[in-house]
Image (cartoon, rainbow, N blue to C red; front, side, top):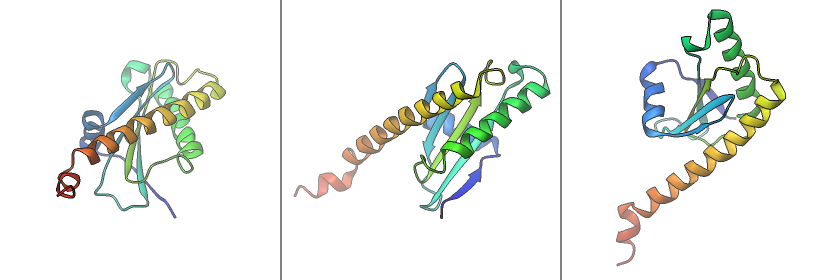
Length: 134
């Protein structure tokens, strides 16, 4: 069974932002990066809502909505050994939930395409492939 971990440390959020891929939509931002130190059947999720969004009750509502989206989509549409970070935007708390679902679905498809490209370019440049041509 797939294990879900929650990202809590700032250094992990920064690592995903620097080394991963990003999809920006009007209602949310999704970042993802590979973490090969995790077991094969694990993925990690983090949630962020900055003070730019408003007071605490707005930030809390934003993160609550992001957690519901993650619980709804990620168990069935995740890649193993990937860290996902969901970032709330200015209208995440007020956006109709059906629109959030559509945006999350689109963001996951797009981020997975970007991650698959990253994997394929990494495999093409690995030294194992050049040694096998001898």
